[in-house]
Length: 268
Image (cartoon, rainbow, N blue to C red):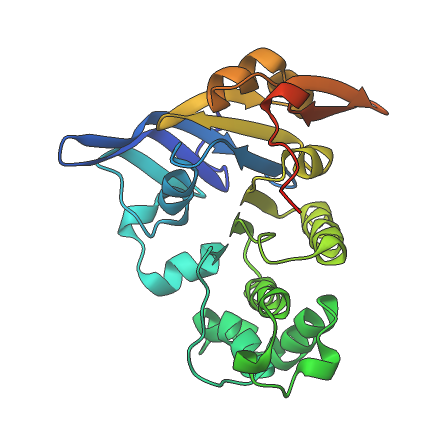
């Protein structure tokens, strides 16, 4: 995909990250457009979460730039970053017994003392309703299941009302119904013109959802394009270091492991 101009909601220009002699992410050029859903896939340790950390502005690149609407993320304070992007990280633990509605309301903190704060109550209620949490709004988050807590934090980032949403394995604790609802939420946000970037291991599911997929390998972008362009046996085989089969289901690529690479049945 071509690199957009400085008005892109999110852009990486030669962004890289190193820790001592260890290169965690090689120099990367990426641009993301409004109204699009991009999925980042790849094996564990390939750099997916490192890339998302740079995109969020929480991690500064060793070299290169991360731009949000043309401004360097490194020059933004915490509040300004929170007005540009919302992040649902893998670890969103709340150790204290806050109520669901209180946690969702955290999404509005960046907008305190601005004209947008006048809409806080309605925005919070709408975010809670969007995740089906109405009956849980006065429950303590420490009493909820993992999937319910994920929905609470998704409602929080929705309430933040940013143009850019970053989701790092937000589907990990969700069951089949929860993942379907997450996909509906993400699709609706993109239709509103939001830019959504997500990390997931559920390749076949996110392939149906995404306009674009990025395959990571060994700290760099291995492939970047539409699901049909990147989900090939050659691309995935090289990235994951194994043989894969790629079929078709109603025009959507479907990735499978050959029977010879699967584990046998567990002893009963």
